[in-house]
Length: 226
Image (cartoon, rainbow, N blue to C red; front, side):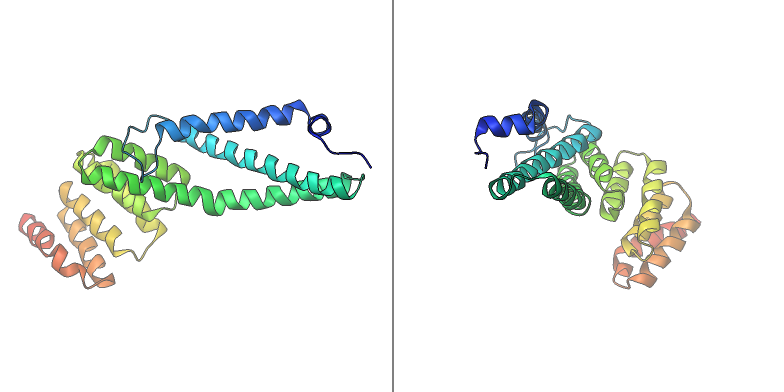
């Protein structure tokens, strides 16, 4: 049986995969340096969202290489015939990691950037908040809260048309979300479409009666402008 050492491992793995592993680790550094998570000190988010997703994919590739090689090390000790076990292990690891990327990493990262944007919005840093929400929605296009928060930020920036599109998208994703109808009603109000605003306010209240007290002043103002 062949002995396992670093030289044999490198020869069996190939320099290409070893280079990919090293590159994956190094390329992760800009992500951590320039796009801090919400629990770190606030800083500007300067990397485009597609670059961030690419770095996350690189991280998954890096993890897959490590796991595959660990499995190969274990099977190498048991048998000299690695072909079937190696391919089975490789396919299995890719399935697990792709599922983890789709179901865990991307939604979790979207939530992190949503929380970061919310804190920026609270401190009235609307430009940075908008950028962070764009990143969150690039990771997860079905994040209703992120769409509604972006609608709020866009209203604060005076971009009512874009805010309306965000509210409508949130309603499309979650048709029974009272917050989405309330937000769209407020956007219609700012656009001067008071009858549509009242329709959405009524819909929000029909879904959640607790919204009545919050929306009462909006309803009254919209009726005065009809």
